[in-house]
Structures are given as structure tokens and as C-alpha cells.
Length: 61
Image (cartoon, rainbow, N blue to C red; front, side, top):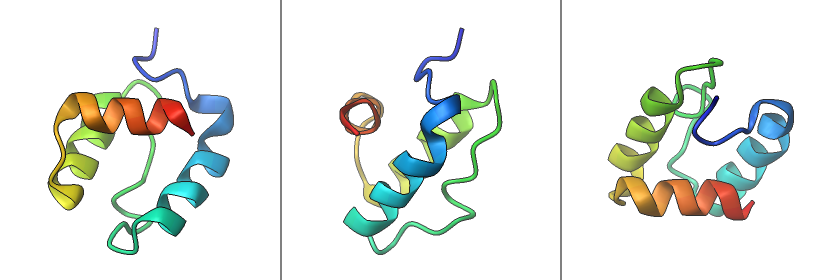
């Protein structure tokens, strides 16, 4: 089971993240099913947030 369970809504979530954070690119937000850790890690690096903060942010969208 995906940590974030976002597969079906990723396009919408990705768009919202890009609006909220200008630093995030399509490459940063590339989602591959089963690779949640890579996605979370990339967002952490770009935004300087903790893993829990990133997960909470994504789930809130």
C-alpha cells in the first residue's frame, strides 16, 4: 500500500504544490507508483521540510 495513497489524484495535487511553491519543478514532482519515498525525499530537499511535514502537506491537499 502506498504511504500517501495519491495515485489517482496526483495530477491535481502536483498542480497545487507547484502553485504553492515556485521552486518545485515537474522533475521534483515526478510520481512513480510505489516510489513514495523518492518523491517525499525530493520535496524535502527542495522545501527544507521534514518527512512528516511533507507527508502532512501532501495529505492536506
